[in-house]
Length: 166
Image 1 (cartoon, rainbow, N blue to C red):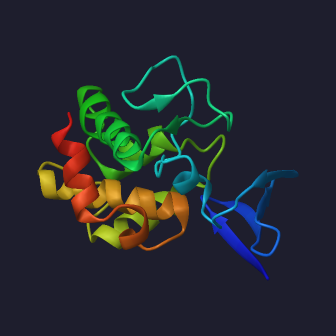
Image 2: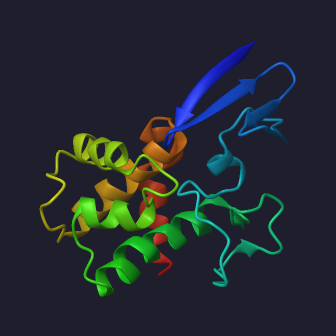
């Protein structure tokens, strides 16, 4: 059985019988039928950079994306990027955050912004200021990155656990 999934503007063909995912002409093993973000314990699909995150697996086995030992470490990295790094850079709206996180050179950024805004009920140009708003935005970004409901990619308890590790 094959399933077509569009995530962040990219087309994925998931063959559940052969347990593979095909995207951009490459085929990846996928024994559990999970999205790339779930397979890598990286629901934000954070790319491998010079940063070494707690719980990160080095070297990554899925370039260009980072892999983590378990989901809490991947979520923690995503929270740090969005809440600390971006806020320190003055990026405080959904439009500013998503434009930096998923730039138009490699994403359908406006669609991503609209998706996060629609899921959270927060205007894309309103300043995000509370912890609950940041949680909603980060959860919506994980949903957009993986094309799955928040309960599958970033439930409240996982977010809280990761946030407590910062």
